[in-house]
Amino acid sequence: MLLEGRKVVVTGIVPGHSRAQAETKLREHGAVVQSAVGQTTDLLIVGAKVGKVKTDKARALGVPVIDWTDLWNTTEAVPVTVVTENGAQPGTLEGNTVSVARQVGPMLALGADMPTGEDWVYEVKWDGYRCVATVVDGRVTMQSRAGGTQYADQFPQIAKQLAHLPDCIIDGEIVVVDGNGHSSFSKLIASNGKASFILFDLLELDGLDLRSAPLTTRREALDYLVNAQAAAVKKVIAVSPMFDDGEMLLEKCRDEGLEGLVAKRRSSRYQEGKRGSEWIKVKIRNEQEFIVLGWRPGEGKRSGAAGSLLLGYYDDDGDLCYAGSVGTGGDYALWESFTRIAGTDGPALNPAGFSPAELKTITWVKPLVVVQVQFQRWTADGPDGCLWHPALLGVRTDKKASEVRRES
Image (cartoon, rainbow, N blue to C red; front, top):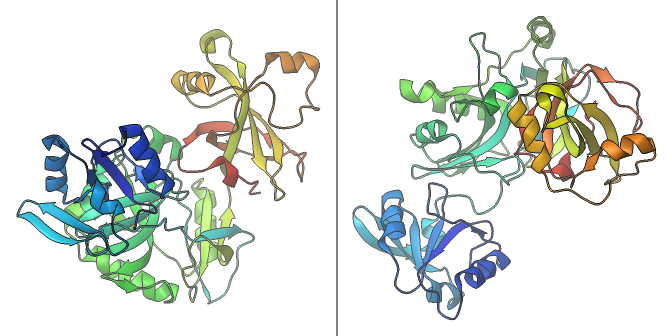
């Protein structure tokens, strides 16, 4: 069976199982169970007395359909019926899969001083959601960096235009760009799905694996791919410009208050999920994600909401470290939302640095929620440093708390 990582919906009366039991069994075999058929669904699994609502939607989206019994009674390629507007066509799950079965981990950049020389090219560091998009037969999946978020439903404008591309896997950043060409994470959160997709790498095109090709080759193919699209597509999807002069771009980023740049070796191969010295991120404005450890109540206009958040990150040994607190930025609704995070009986880290009076004001929460914070600097090096003049930008749903590390 090929269920690992597949997004599935089960409907109808499942033989010998309640709906909850059937969904649990699917999860145990690695499937991601969805409640409704959508653009990101890979497979519709049907039992007896199947209603037409879900099968009709599957027909419209071209989602493969398989009987529950057939799914478990074969060790070969699973037979399915692909339901399209032209009728039912027999096939196999292998042959008719329309999205990648596994999570494609994006290549990551290492924080360091800017490298120079003819071996390097440079581009702006975009401030948004990292996304790897897969297009197969006009169907689109858009995976977050951590794999826990699927963006196709959240950003339907982007998914609609990606569907016009040939089969491919592309890497980029979902952003909101202002009139000056600057991206803003806080504006992205408030965008209601109206955003752009800035592309900076191409992993596959028409079944050809480009990961082992040098960056310059992949970028030439990406430019060709996007330039060949209609104007409507290019209003939403664009390629991130690359520059040969890193010093010039760095100065431009400083002048315009941008977060920084990314330097990439021209010959670099695409290494999924790896962070190495082939890609280097150079930060000008300090901004990164942190874990919410707890909150203190607000006063005045923020009464009934959190007044400040206690922040943390994991060190290389997997221990939580305190990063200080943030109490500015965001609107009332954002601060009020933190009061609904599941609480704990005590802090997730050693509270030795807090006085008894301070501890009485803190509500500790499970260290699961990740937020984006901008700040001027750290007060000291190492795990005892705290953020200086931080401002909250928003919640990150695309990052796992377990991945949060100090970056500067």
